[in-house]
Length: 195
Image (cartoon, rainbow, N blue to C red; front, top):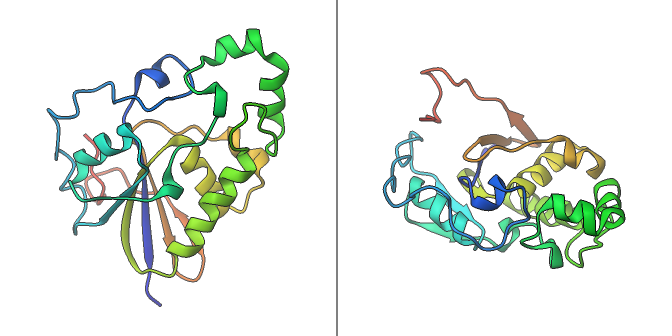
């Protein structure tokens, strides 16, 4: 059976992450142009690069190659009116709404997507992707990677906030009849090289 391989790469760090605030469409904190193409040799064969439409995704993708295919399902989690807000500020101005959002995956007090909706969106995309063999590298967001792991590990969305996704981290998934999480060797034998 042909295998679908998906490497999920979290975008590089942004100022929003540094300040613990919900993102807007901001650029990367790093000088991505100075390291453009620096990770293009990370894989034995050139994979298909996929990603969301945001600036930070397009800039991170430039580290791996220049042929990014925009996939709307890989777009960031929609936090509605909380976009650009610091979590500390929300704890003061909207503590009940924040508490509800953290505790109920079906809630969306911010007027955007619920975690449940995000997990369904990403799960539907994974279901469609598994019919296409090959290696795909998806440059995306921490919340999207969490949602993909919920699908693969068959977890309920209650586990969503139990996963931390670091900037430029890689998560390897394989589909060969079913999705599997694959933990990579980080020694010299690893196909994905991290600086």
